[in-house]
Length: 208
Length: 208
DNA sequence: ACCTGAACACCGTTCAAGT
DNA sequence: ACCTGAACACCGTTCAAGT
Image (cartoon, rainbow over all chains, first blue to last red; front, side, top):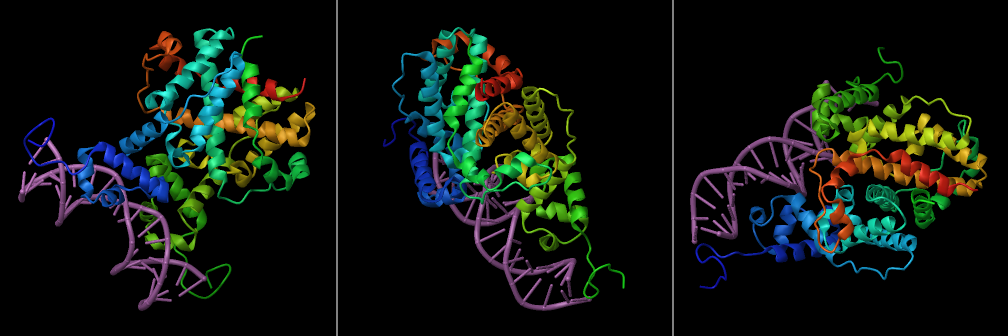
């Protein structure tokens, strides 16, 4: 009787934790796009089709890996001032997303942070709570969070995609202002203006 | 001598315009994700590998199709007031992106609007120009545009992804505010608050 | 219970050979 | 010049059979 629960049948050759650890190894070595069912199975030394007994499909695998990562995000020290608390929470979310460029395809999943649980949900709670403290109705507070979320996801996705490709300089066709900027555009686009936009959104969305 | 330019060799069986028209047919019928090199060739009645004589690779194909679409976006009537002009231009961009859900994967390409040319670049010019008119330096105006772009791309990508999946209700674990909202979250998330966030961004980013 | 190889139905792309 | 089929190096997933 070697197994702890269930006592008949062929013994397992792997487990969910082992699979997630192997996936993480592959991601760190070659990036998420190189993680295929077949390569993952090879890494574990098992048959490719065996994975389907531990995970519904490849999409569920990615969500599981992301959840592991999300659980490890440390909650930041939160300032007293509710507006600053929103800035800190949003910046923490953005920082975490920036650390998972391989998962970019999943960022726009509806309710992603809700699905991840743990610190991710806590950060949503911090933002919604702080908005309410600033005088928002709960409904308005949700809209505030969603606006920040859109902005943050957009920024991080564009940033991730920009790292590789050569920057584009706008062509001077009926575009006096763009022409005036000309070759300065790529340098400007490379600047980190996340917090600037974040603060603008917050000040524009909260009462007073 | 049937060909107009070049007079030796085997005659072409297709052309770029034909390829783009066929791609558009497939997209309208089954969605972009169903457009494969092989299916596209079949639609044209040619060998799959022939496509590589007209297009560098599949990625270039998508950019070409997107450019065609972008060229057809009509420029909106622009208000006198520069702030309203920004709202109208940004909303037009958002509207256009919403009409191409199949191209969502390409939205975060760096300098997408610049690459597309035509009306797309004109709308960037409108926003940058209006920001300058409001008192921004050209540098600041670029940052304003980028913030609006991040917000718009994030909103549209999340919206596109949300249409299919079931909404998530936050779990009540140490999250009093989220618990209080509870099942109202999906309904709130379904509301269109784009313009609200857009105006907040604009008022927070422009001088005065 | 769990694992497996074979098989299915695909991909994007290269390249030597043909016209 | 341009087109082509064969081939390469892969995918995710299903399923009957095995232990």
